Length: 169
Figure 1 (tube, rainbow, N blue to C red):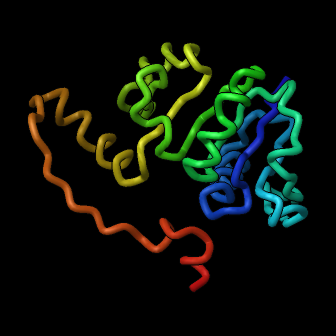
Figure 2: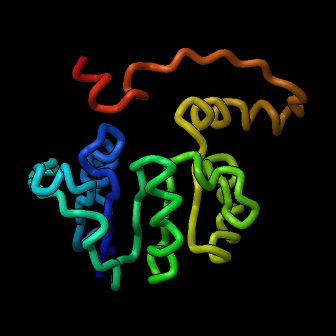
């Protein structure tokens, strides 16, 4: 039996990539649902060889959902993640909203996967931003060997951070 998964923000650039990765890695999902805002109702997104039509987040019944991948921004996560988690879904939030919340583990599996044990406090898992994930994966083995005390980093974010509008421009 596979999981029932929703992708909140499925019509955005990160949401579309989440769907691509779920399909590419053959994630064991029996059901995958694309959720978005009202303005994206019916918009089509690819999921492997399938096409999903976006449903509206605020009208969706989360009962029976196992995993909710959130990538619709902090305001959406603030409004919806706790409600969805309370209905039993494990929320994995890609926004910045829960990143510093004391009861929500901030996880990069290759670095601190053991911290997942704490997710049941809220049923929510947060992840750092894209540049941080890459950096800590590279630094972890160095830190384990030589105890890094300080890192100074400058990032130059790509246009993808502006979402589909930035990419299309």
